[in-house]
Length: 215
Image (cartoon, rainbow, N blue to C red; front, side):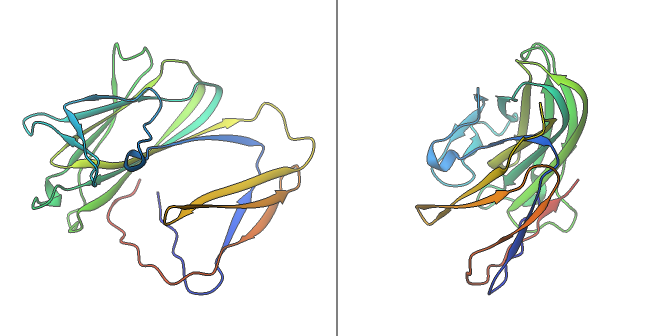
């Protein structure tokens, strides 16, 4: 997951309509919002990041949650924002990503992550893409195991074929927070394949770190 590079003045974002559906899930533990079907093993919930931390450092902390079921799934993208605990070395973080298609009876490891050799920041993104040919059945679970640090955020995006092309226009609504105040912007997009520019709000420059490895 790449963070946007916003500059002073007007920023433009592009929305592309491709006749596909995207189902997104995002954790928001700092606001008390969990992922669907979320379950923990050896994880404590904290008010400050990282919000999920292993109770015991002798074994990984395990996060499990459900993926949306889809009969025409094409691609799954997973992003994990891990964070080193205060006073610890970011190079010690280890994250393993696994999937279960039988409700947790058996697991297939998708990938193991380690920090980049030059990683110094406490926060780091780990990203993975899974190409899917067929359905994601109900009861499909994703598992994130973390050692040497905690979890600040987990997000998934499931791309699937849309049931049918929209007959009319498409309304795109963008929601965000400015501090604790919710904001929204709405744009109308014509049916079919078309791109529309989405002007961003004017805001002061922001600097983002670019830590971690990107798949």
